[in-house]
Length: 231
Image (cartoon, rainbow, N blue to C red):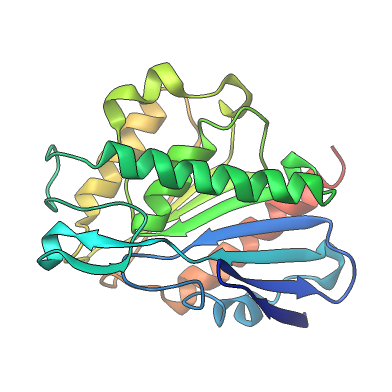
């Protein structure tokens, strides 16, 4: 599937050869940028008929506490890397608002909400889960890679009825030293306990992406977007 690469100060966009009828908005992890997951798109080998536009936003640059206050691209500040520690709620909500604007832009470009998948790795995955499940219009799915659900205390009250049955794919490495898999499992279990359908995949890897995972992402994306074409 050939895509044309376009870049702005805010994002990298891979446009399909034919007019887009679906979109994947994919958020990178801490300290990376929108280029990080661009090389994965050809490896997905998605059918050209799906006509998917991939949008890879760049996170804002901000100081990150756990990295000695160094400024880098980050969707929110990380004060500690442990469960139950203080979270940067303001930063998380600011980035969720950024993501909402990307969704709105796709809607204005003629893409139906139920043809938009939200994806993210690590910090980007946290924003993807947080924002997609609160989004007022039914989306096509959300994919969280090597990540967790932030702001869990407010989730039940803020989850959107429209996305109560949203397909969720969570993938995690068993040997992840950055975000231990138990954080992902705890988020999966909380989501399932509240009635969300979570497809869980784990791999013998660290904080990264592997080929088996890419193949399963491709199957999941194709199923989400092929199914939604008829609805």
